[in-house]
Every structure is written in C-alpha cells, then in structure tokens.
Amino acid sequence: MLMKKKRLLLPQRARQIPLHWSWIDHRLVADRHLQRCSSDAWTLYLLLLSVGDSHGLSYYSLASIAARLGWDEGRVMSARRELVRGDFVAYEKPFYQVLELPSPESPIRSEGRRVDLGTVLREALNKIHTDQP
Image (tube, rainbow, N blue to C red):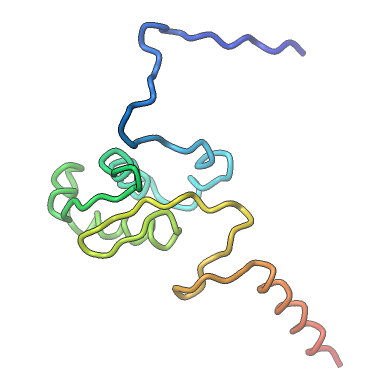
C-alpha cells in the first residue's frame, strides 16, 4: 500500500503557532475524549482554550460566556459541569483552568476524589475472592 505524501493545500495559509497560549491537543481524538462530553461542552472548551493564558487560566463571567456563545446561562453551566466532571476543566468562581488532558491510564474521578485504576481493580479482585464460599 502506497502512503500518500502530505502537502499543504494552501501554503500561504499554513497555520503558525501563535506566541500566546492556544492550541488543541490531538489526544482529544486519539484517546477518545471527544466521546465523553457533548458538543456544547466542547464548544465551551474551545472558547476557554482560546481565551486562556499560558496556564489555561481565564476568568470570563457566566454572562460574558453566554453572550459570546449565544447561549443562556443554564446552558453554559451545564456544559461547564460536563467539563469539570470529565476532568478537562477546573472551575472555582470566577476562574476557569483548562487542565492537561487525562491519559487513558490516569486516575479516574469518583465522588470528587481521584482514585488510581490499579487500586480499583485490586479492590474488585479482593472482593471477588472474599465473597466466594
């Protein structure tokens, strides 16, 4: 099978990495993170990536975000909850922080605390062994 050689379709419009912070990590697709949240959540995520500083911090108000996206505030809050629950964004009024993407092997959230996946599996195996007659 022949591999097609990549070429810029519009070289004069080649994307340059800006001096300010703002990019989208390819792991959103590669690690299947996109499947974990709604399109509303990812729309908010894109806005937060675009306005955040080099640490992913921003402090746009709820009303400002709603106005920029053309949404009501409830829709923004719902999208924000998804991103926080998915461990993509941290929020503490008035600050948002876009977080480093979790790796597939990373700890998972359970009732607001981080739990190591290995610990979960060991506990499950122990429970199976102790529940047997």
